[in-house]
Image (cartoon, rainbow, N blue to C red; front, side):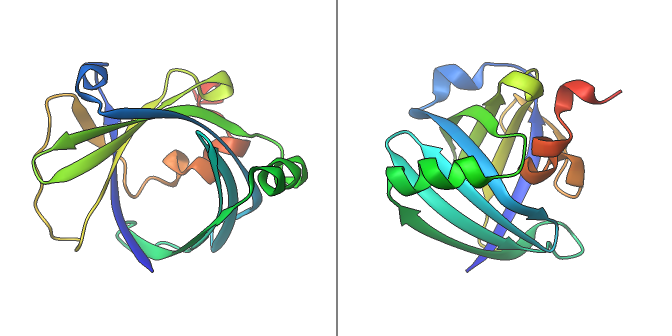
Length: 156
């Protein structure tokens, strides 16, 4: 139940040709407090509730619990969420032995494209594709919970 993940900005849309799947995602936060976020997400035809704990010092690891819920429940819970629902398309791209999840954001976060990779340990090596840019793992501005209330388009 510990998620180990690194985040990177993406420098081009070359990943789209390599994607083996893509899904539209809408997600909102019942709680966006950094110590414990509670997220409601619709992804394609599925819906989920996710609870995440605070990140460790490196920003790579944190507790994560996720449960599938009905689409009806998700629709009703999204209505209760804090202002600022995230709208994005998630592309999945296999690179070496890992899968990158690349999110292209819309609406108030349009212009932001970010890649995440889940690892088995914080020190695990992985192949870096040429479209992978600056690492932003420990930059809390790139957490979706932050983006929901502080959209990318408003950054100076």
